[in-house]
Length: 482
Image 1 (cartoon, one colour):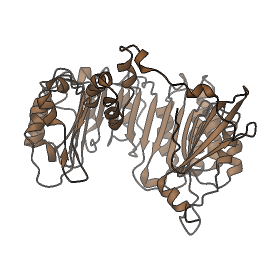
Image 2: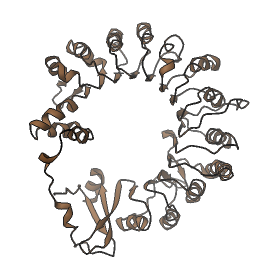
Image 3: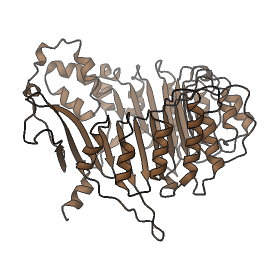
Image 4: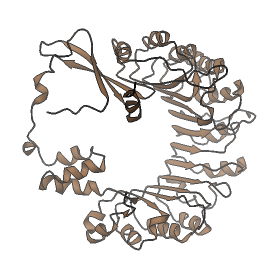
């Protein structure tokens, strides 16, 4: 069995084994695919997700081609080749209706959908599950293409997911078509221009079946008008919404008892009286901070309430993401510690804390706050953060106590008094191996380098921790000149 080594890769093995010692010979056994039952092969090939790999599977033999060809056409999208030629399988699918029945997802762009082949092929996707529409043109707006796209989709019986992204507001004819969809379980609408998008008038028929909803332009809608649209969605589990005032969001969530995932931006407002109905037990929370401004304690009180609204029930969150690209390089200091501490104190009184993934890549935290995170959430398995520190020794001591951590991504960004240039401590493959030894940590990403560890079985029966370093192309090219 041949193992390919990534570009600019290094390998380090723990002191208990020599780097020159070979891996156990059991890894070199060749498997005979002819002995594999045919009913298992489709299940195996379904895990092949890259289009080029599926194409390679079609070239193995006739059996592989028979099974892999439908997978090759399961996802259809238009793209422009390097030569400038439009590449789309619509012509092939019109000649092979059997392959058109294998299409499960389609992504169309207004620039290409005007082709006569695309609408004709779309009508043949009778097993289509997911559809996406993109229109990034600022001028030359033509509503007929989107309306035609939606008019065909509403005739497909198995469609469950619909995503629309447009730089301009949707025309009235498009909203009329959306009113006819009844069986959708997921819909996402993102417009960059025009009036705010609510739920009135177009979502009544699909509302009872919706499981996932994304509305990325709600700023300016009256709270009562927005709330009336959500009252008919008892099965909604995932919500992405922008433009809702922070003080009104708990009231909105109280009408969604089955919600488990929330992705929202933070718009400061006065906190209202807590709703009488309990809030849903969120498992995934993403809060986006979109304005460069001073982060006050009141802002983080909003997070505390969403994570742990009462002292009566433990939080069920498994993932927290604080995102704010505009805030990169701005330290939030002790403010961050305060909300972590408050949530931790509430949860310690109630029992087990379930948080497993924590991401604060877009705001700086100091080593002290990193320690507070692990004290508040000892069960974290995945951590992504930007550290405003160059104290590598202290960081390693803190991570050594993270017993459940398996994935770590760190960006070092230390803002100086007069400059905003990042100060990055030297991190080597030996540092990564030291952090992995005696812990569950197996993947460490530091700036542009990825370190992966694995236990290998040596011929003498002993085990050894092998650590591999992979650098991206930019970093590798720069290293050649030093």
